[in-house]
Length: 380
Image (tube, rainbow, N blue to C red; front, side, top):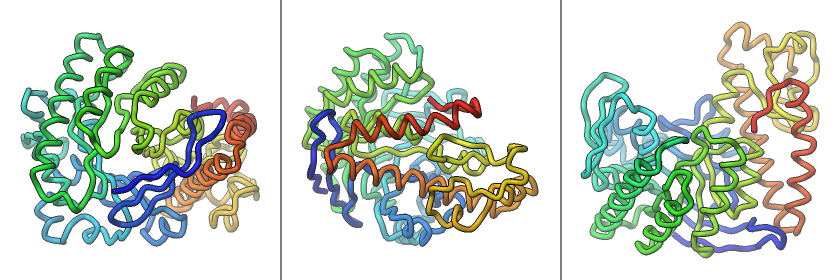
């Protein structure tokens, strides 16, 4: 793996760069669509490629449970299994374990959890998670961590941080002891919403010399202003010469804040999940295609958008597809939402290269919030 910063914004920490991985070079900042189960829902691989997407995220936890690592190993790895020739980042499963509070028990050597699929018991250790991702053939792999939610008491957050650092050290030692030609293992900064814990987590991970660093434990229910503060605070603690990844963000407001803070990679299910629920991005805000006002509308989702959905289909037609529960509704709206986000990130990169990122951010958000305010559906 090689990472190079190309251009730094003069008025913020925003930057462009190139991340060279096993399956090609990725221009940063970059948004990674989420393909939890070895597929980005409602999208074919060639449709993703047509949108310029050459890096997606998949999930170790879900693939471990179904179809099972033995199945993917037999297929020759995740790339072959899902017929994807570009880069894949795999989450360690730490967040999924965090979200399944009733079904898991965190122990010093790993996490014991009950499958949400069939109730069977499983145990993941830092070393096992590395081995699983090595079998998957992930281009970027994440260490097993402990994520905590907003309003977590400091002592609990500190305990989670201690386990996360211990697991990161074990993951790195194990990774260094095996063949690591297939991918790159990154650390995850935790520490909840306590500055001293964030600083401690960053320092401990940096001492382990990971090739890249993720910021975890954000966008877990905290107010937007809190997210912004801790994102910027944490990003400033990380090495400028290494890639920075903030986990689980995918709305324009969050993406713009992340880029301004010097973040290079981000992912989220939001663009695809909301698309399947009839929510679409426009340059004046999000709209619900199920609204009665779209019943007779011959307009596209966004008249300024050049995606195939907007060039060929009306809001009225899309509303009809959702109301009749046609599969095509999800396909067309997902394509639009991903096109919108990829175009936004491309415009962000261009604005940084041209030295006008802050003005771009200000102008974009000024227009983007108009529809949200009118529709009372603002996403902070």
